[in-house]
Every structure is written in structure tokens, then in C-alpha cells.
Image (cartoon, rainbow, N blue to C red; front, side, top):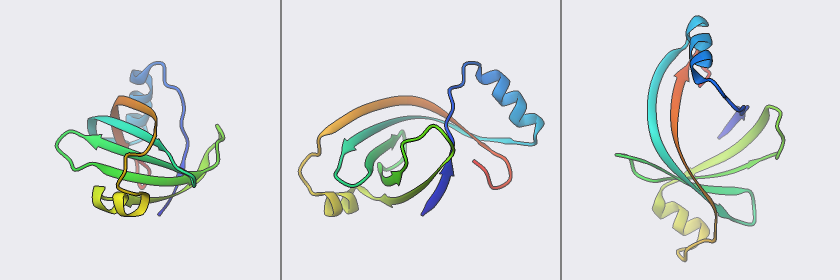
Length: 109
């Protein structure tokens, strides 16, 4: 799969929410998630855990820039990830716990 992503630091989420609402955006969900990033030879692998959902592994390739960037990614189940990257534990790079709000505006998330 492919996506274009742009990430930015948000110091006042209420301002961003108000802007997105004004543009016609709709709040879709808020989730608490834990992303564990692993060191792999080709690209980045992360295990995303969201309460009440099966863990999801995301392997992606993207340029390390601060500008909007194109990303190619593949989603794996836990079993598929073990088959692709091995059953032995991978070296953990970093763990990020966060609360994420998802807003939708047309075909943009």
C-alpha cells in the first residue's frame, strides 16, 4: 500500500480541532496505542497495539524528511510478521505510547 504523510508538532490541539471542524472534518475515533519500533535491515517495522484489537505489524519505507513524504507500507498479522521477520524477538529501537485522535475530511485522515 502507499500513503502520503505529513507530521507536525501540535502544541494546542483545541486550535487544530476547531480548524478541522470548520473545514468540515468529522471526528472518527480516539484510541490509546502503543507502538513498538524494531530495528530491521530494510525500512522500519512497528508493532501497533490498540486496546480491544489484535496487534498489527506495519513494515514501511519512507524518506527521513520533515516535509510531506511518500510511504510504502505492508500490514502483517502477528503470524505473518513472524514468518516474514523471524520468530525470535527482534531488537527494540523505541516504544511510543500515545493517545491518537483520528479525524476524517473527504478521503484524508
